[in-house]
Length: 469
Ligand SMILES: Cc1cc2nc3c(=O)[nH]c(=O)nc-3n(C[C@H](O)[C@H](O)[C@H](O)COP(=O)(O)OP(=O)(O)OC[C@H]3O[C@@H](n4cnc5c(N)ncnc54)[C@H](O)[C@@H]3O)c2cc1C
Image 1 (cartoon, rainbow, N blue to C red):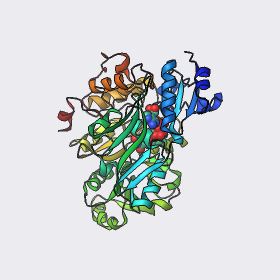
Image 2: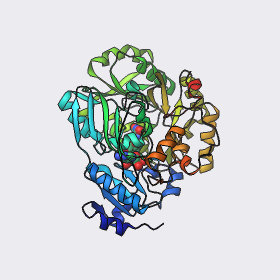
Image 3: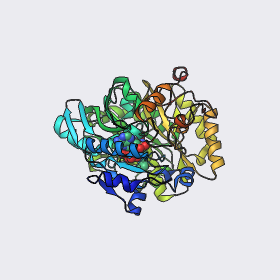
Image 4: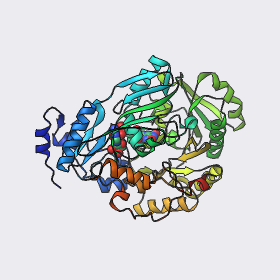
């Protein structure tokens, strides 16, 4: 599809543009290659030019000019999404928000920032200004933007205490620019934030975010070793339930993931041991010791998170897969919900069913107020057919998969694109120019998934309450 990019750039001479083909290609890509399926499907996706707005006025000018010329616009933060969320499927403009990166203000317990602010920079700012830090962040803390996290991510380090992005109160306000002839600026607050939360930028460009803060801590990374994977998984559950213990990470990894693939931990963990990677506030480490002993665990390593060459959080969440890919390119992964209350029994069942074909990796979270775990299991990839079968077998066993091998909101399965979502898309992007191809309901409102979903991470399915009960 050819777009009038020359006309667009001539109309907006003051905008910073990138047109160098190699750079445009680079800024049209994200971590889609994590998935062998997406790698095949999306490798050719590329925008025509990249625009780098420095202010909301420039965002408005770009959206209005693109709307007038029917040019698609795909918002972009740092491009660390791993389902091809930020990849332009129909060319057009990649709208890179990384220049809009200021923290606007910090107050006790609250922060407001521009969408392109980096998570690490936000934490540095709020720690110094008000002794606070983000409640949770993805493992890409050093690179990702806050707008990209809210529009394309879900959960991360801190979710064992605070839940995930969808929990009411975790996102307080979003300022969004619509894609219309005369773009409007909307401030979404309360439940309204759900419209743009995890919507892949399909219904507006987020320019500012307002978030709650947790008290900043001098976090300590701990590695606990266990004789078996289920000992580690049960300890992870017990630790997450210790509500008086201030914690940020409870990550469970089966052997030989850390021994074989984590260079920074070389020699620290005996062969055959499963581990829990934890981040605790210093006063609580001794409180955990008796519970650790009860679960046959041994402390193998501790270091201030600040002092670690590679922090524990960069071995957790989706960084586990990244660390493994550094030494074994044949591996891919799953994203699974092991819902309460039967999560441990289901984990044990799936561990026995797949063995070393699906090495276990769990992240403990609070989900809908319950302690349970997400699986980010590795998969020793053989064929796309076998991958689909592994996904089907999990779902049939009662462990829904948020498919990281699909690039649409619906097939990814995290977001329920309901009537409210669709109505907001019609209002905010009536021509369907924002990140086209990512919301199936826009192109085909009657589409239904092959296997009906009972639970979503964002947006309630009518059945969701039943599943969580
Ligand atoms: C190694 C690795 C580890 C990861 N760990 C985690 C994790 O722990 N938890 C997690 O949730 N995710 C994780 N992810 C996925 C990803 O890093 C996060 O979702 C991240 O926060 C995305 O931020 P970004 O700035 O890179 O966004 P991008 O990848 O640039 O964009 C993500 C999506 O948001 C849209 N978007 C970006 N900015 C805006 C905006 N201002 N307005 C509207 N739409 C916008 C894009 O169009 C795209 O659809 C990981 C990915 C990798 C590669």
